[in-house]
Amino acid sequence: MNRPNSIFEEVLGTLPDRQRELVEAAYALLEHSSGPVHRQFLPALSDATSRERLEELLRRTGRTLVTVDQLHFTSGFDDAVRTELTETGWQPLSLADRAVLVLVLVYSVAIPRSVEQIAADSWESPHPTTLQDVTRDSKVPVGEVRAALGRMTACGLLRTVRGGDHDSGYVPGPQLSRLTPAAREQLQDQLILAAAPDHPLAAAIRERRHNRVGGQR
Amino acid sequence: MNERDAALWWARIRSGGPQQVSAGGPTPAGLLRLVEADARAVWLIPNLPDSAGPAVLIEYGVPGSSMMDSKGTLRVLAATLRCCWPDPATDPWPGLPASTGHVGQVLQRLVPGRNKVSRQQLLSAGLRRLSVSGWVLLEGADTVRIGPRIASFGSLELSTLRELWRLIPDTAEDGPEGS
Image (tube, rainbow over all chains, first blue to last red; front, side, top):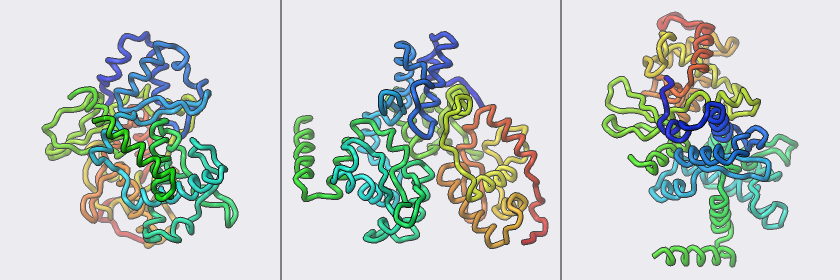
C-alpha cells in the first residue's frame, strides 16, 4: 500500500536521510496530534532549511504552520485554500452541527469575553455550555442536538467537561487551536455579527468588510 | 492539475473525509486512488509515507486523536473487518460486501452479555458513527462494506490489524442466532 508520494519526493528529495526523517516526523506530529505540540518534539523547526521544507510540505497539502505560543505549534488550513473552498460552497458540517457549535461558542466564549473573563484572541474557555443552554432557545430538536454534540466532540471541535450539576458541559475543543490568526479574526467577527447584530462593533465589522470588498475592485 | 488544485483536494479530504470522484479524472499530487470494485468511481485518500503518518505519534509519546471504545464502536469496526475482509493476506480494500446480520453475529462474540436489542442498537449506532468518517460504507439498509479510510493504514498498522483479525472469532453467516 506504500507508494512514493510525489509531493514528499519533490519537497524532501534532496535532503539527507536524517534531516528528511525529522521533517516528516514534524509533519506527522503537527498534523495528527490531538493538540498543539511542544517545540522540543519538533527539532525540524530549529533548522532553517528543514523549517522551510516543512512549511512547503504543509502548503502543498493545503495546510500551514500555526504558532500557538512561543513553545507550542500546530497546523491549520492555509488561509488562501480555506477562502477558496468556502467561497465555492464547500461545507462538510451539517446545518445542525454548525448551529450547535455557534451556541457553544456564544455561551463559552462570546459571553465570558464580553465581560473580559477571556482574552480577546483566545478560544479556550473554562466556562462550559450545558445541554440546557443549547436546547433552551434553540430551534434544533433535542435529539439532533445530542447527536451533534457527540459528533463534534468526537472530531475535537468540542470537548466535554465533567463536574457538578452546574459546571459540566461542553467547551471549545482542541481543533480550535488550529485556526490561523486570520481565521480567528474572521470567526470572532462572525460571532459578533451572530450574537449582537445591532451592536456598534457589528456595524464596524460590516463597514470594514464593505471597504475591503470595494478596495479589491 | 496544478499545485493549487492539489492543495484544495488535500483540504477537502482533511475536512470532509475520503472523497469519491469519477474514474476518468486526474489524480491530484500525493493522493492515492482507490478504485471501486465496478471501476466506475474512485476514492481519493492521502498517500502518506509511514514516516509522516499517525504511527509517528506513538514513537514520540504524543497523544493523537484516537477513537475511544467506550461505546463499543471499535468492536463494530472489528466485526465488520472480520466479515468484509475474508483473506487477511490481501489488502483490505475493496473487500467484499457483508450483511449487517453477519456482522451482528460476529459482534455477538465480541460483546458477550448484551441482549439482542442492546446489541442491535450498538450495531446500528456504531455503523452510523463509522460511516460518517469513512471507516465503513453502508449500502442500503442491511449491507456493509469496508470504508476507504481503512486503505490509509500503513504497513505497520496493517500487520497489527492482521494479528487482531486472527483473534476475532468468525461465525457462519447462516448459523443459528441466540440472544
